[in-house]
Length: 113
Image 1 (cartoon, one colour):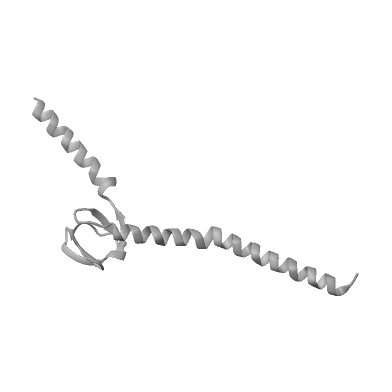
Image 2 (image 1 turned 90 degrees about the horizontal axis):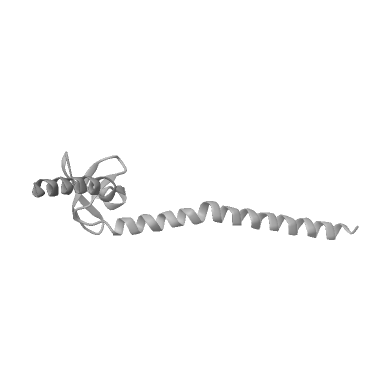
């Protein structure tokens, strides 16, 4: 067989292999990271006064003021000024809606009696 044909076919196979590796990296590493960054940006833009949040360092509190770059959180320590990107979770529905729902049920039961 002609050596130049073998050399060309190995180059083509190598290029296909690199393309396949890039596609795998894109779908398993790059695309999920871009989606996570988009979700985080939307979350930080949706922060509002009155939401209960937790920061990356574990500080729990209620947002009392929001600006473009930072939030002021009321916690046990008092008011803390932090950057928006340090807030990791919204706990309003997860933790506090259930307790508010129970307290409303108790009030309704008391009012019925």
